Length: 154
Image (cartoon, rainbow, N blue to C red; front, side, top):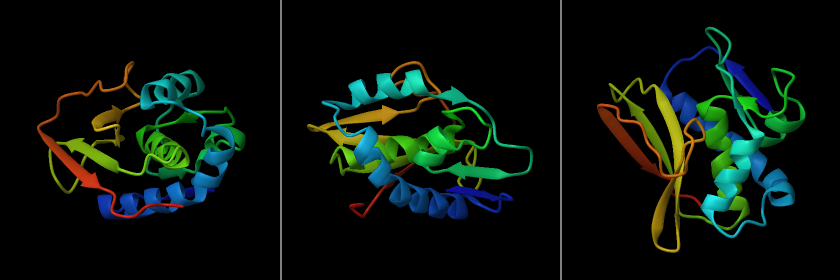
């Protein structure tokens, strides 16, 4: 499923991300659920994704199945940081890594400019920002918000 709408606020984006994660978990269980660690998953997802900004004035949030099978851009894996947050969170849940976080970065609390995910695996937090080259690599921004996802998605 693709959610395309004018950007209103970060709360709406987060609401849509959660909807897309729930929509995507069954697909990820089928195609992305046999990983031994977040590092292994991250390396595989890096090979399958290419950064492409949203269309001007539109917030595009693609489910994982849309990202790979019916991509808005017509090319499998093309998306931006919010699409990839949906991807990494959905894959974490598909692998039964259920202690997950959304990380918002920017200069103001109301209008962050970057988003990615993190998961706790075997007692360690792994940040998964597919716009970076390596797992646990993070860019510096003046403000970081960490949102622990309270629900176990199934």
